[in-house]
Image (cartoon, rainbow, N blue to C red):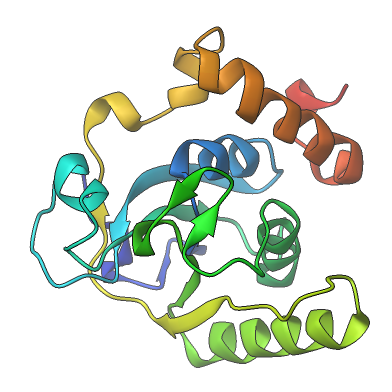
Length: 192
């Protein structure tokens, strides 16, 4: 699978990289959005080249579970992706999402350009000031590093395994909630 972070823009498409804890949840959410062409689950932000899922899960590689999104900025803006990012997880818990604990589950935005960095910093600051959360936002904002696609069985995980326990009891309710909030921004096949 091609490393999508080599270029910030390809054929009028752009790249965004986010970590919200479990990449299965994040992938499922962003796949529903208009303008999103591809979502790849993987790892970024660590010091071990070509890590495996097992390596990342042991918490010593420094990588975060992430998704790398290829999107059409003429259809969905980076600001809209940031809104989806912040609404799809709890950005106030350090190195934790639900029962998943460790640096690999951190809330992180890996920016691919100065414009993305500025938008991410502004979105985080405004959301923090808004009082939407009772605790401060701890989302890390860092330059994009090498993105390593996860193993094939992690790709399209929710689509391929909707009846699996985690998918049915964790991802499906999160996705249903997301679809209600982002109804106008969903691909037609996801509109409820």
